[in-house]
Length: 234
Image (cartoon, rainbow, N blue to C red; front, side):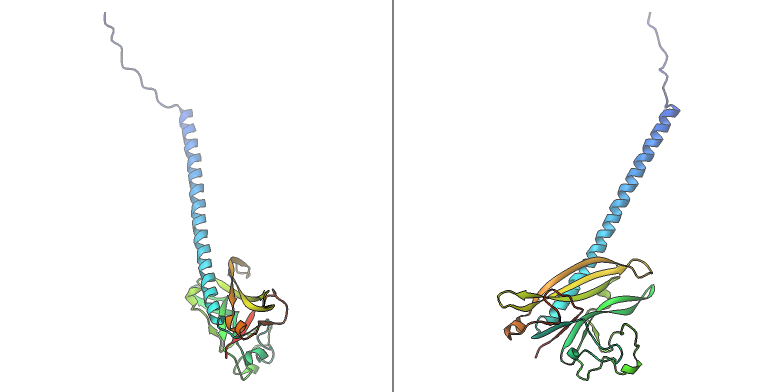
């Protein structure tokens, strides 16, 4: 006799199985979130570094162009007399390339930054039209005749420090190569703490200076670092 059985009863998930599934899904979700967040932070950090590198490259390119044809170069850590407002004696004969603290206006308000300037030689020996009216504190303001080397939009959110050193030619036994050093940084908090984002340097072989039998003048020795590069061509 053919026996007919009833439909098999379907078995559902137990409460314990559901709880285990929920826990596993939660762990997976957290892992995915952490991986995605880390990848996003890495991407943003890389974009930031590339941007800082771009600023560094722009500054190095223009700084090299400014001094590449110079016939006379002298490095110094002095721009002028803080009290009298007068220039270094070098600036009576030389142009100068340098970085300096200044104030710029942004969407979030005014902020102190370091920018690159050039200054033509001042045969009258004055940094400012009225030296007696200039502040006598530790730091002089940017000279009134100083000209920005780059437009403000090139810098983005960064400050840039420019410094100089020398490299001696072993065959000539003279320092005829200028080393330009650039540091790109930004403020990390309101207390004025800065974080360096990119650094780099370029060597500039001063062919005109070498051709005339001159060398880079400096108060120290090869390898010393200076804040001001004085230069001119006849």
